[in-house]
Image (cartoon, rainbow, N blue to C red; front, side, top):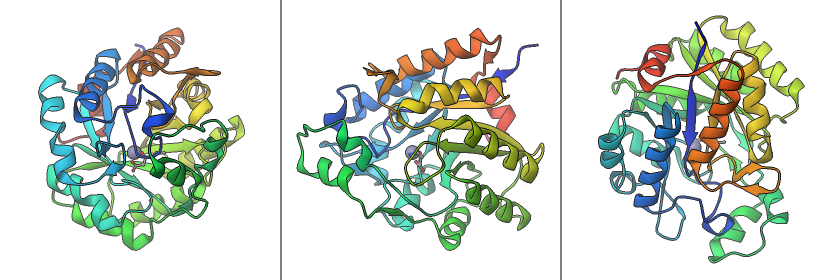
Length: 300
Ligand SMILES: C[C@H](N)CC(=O)CC(=O)O
Ligand SMILES: [Zn+2]
C-alpha cells in the first residue's frame, strides 16, 4: 500500500507583491481560480490569505467572504485560513477571519522572529505600487508571536473545532509547541509545518531538515504529522527531501514564485503538479481531502 502524502497549496500569502509575478492571485476571482486549480491538480489543503485590490494584505472578514463561499462550493479541499496575516498586524486583527469562519484548519505561528524579505529586492526592481518596495525593503520587521499571542489564538478558536497548521520556523518553535502540548492547550495529532529558508528562521540545508525532523520526532513521537515548506528556490528540493523522509509537502506562490532555477511559476497548479510528479516518482500517492481529514483528525 503506497504511503499517502498531503499536499498543501498556499495560493497567495502576504509576502510577495503583485509586481513580482503576474501569476500571483490578488483579486477574489483570481484567488478562487488558483484555489480550485490547485485542488484539481492534487492539493488536499488550500491555505488562504486575502488581499486588497492593489495587493496589500487584507485581514478583514469581508475580504475573505469575497472568495470563501465560492471556493467551498467548487471544491471539497480542506480550507486553511491564515492567522499570520502580515507581520505588522496585531494578533487580534490576525485571528478575525478564523474566528468568524471557523475553518477546518488555521495556521498558527509558533514563535517570534526577525522577518527578512529584503533579500528579494536584489531580484525584483520594478514596482507598480510604492508600498511594494517599502514592504520588501523593511529591515525592521519582527513577526511577533509571544506565548500570550499564541494562547490568545488558541483560546479564541477553542470552541470552533478548528485545528492548526503549526508553523515552525526553527527548533525553538518546536519546543514552544511541545510546551503547549504538555499544557494540554493543543491536541494530537499535531500538524507540524516546518518552514525552511525564510530569512530569520532556519536555513534550507539538508542538515537543517534532518535537525528539525529529528527534534520533532524526539518531542512528539507518533503524535504528529510532519510537513515542510521551502521558501523561494528551496521549495521543490525541500519537498523532495520530505517525500523521501516520510513527510508531507506545502507548495504555492505564497512561499515561492518559482517553478525551477530562473523559471517563474505560471500558476499554483503548476507547483502542485511538480510536487505530485516527485511523489509519484517515489512510488507515493497524493492524499485526497478526505484522507487528509482522517490523517489530521479534522472536524470535516
Ligand atoms: C512562511 C509562510 N508565510 C507561513 C505562513 O503561511 C504564515 C501564516 O499564514 O500564518
Ligand atoms: Zn500564510
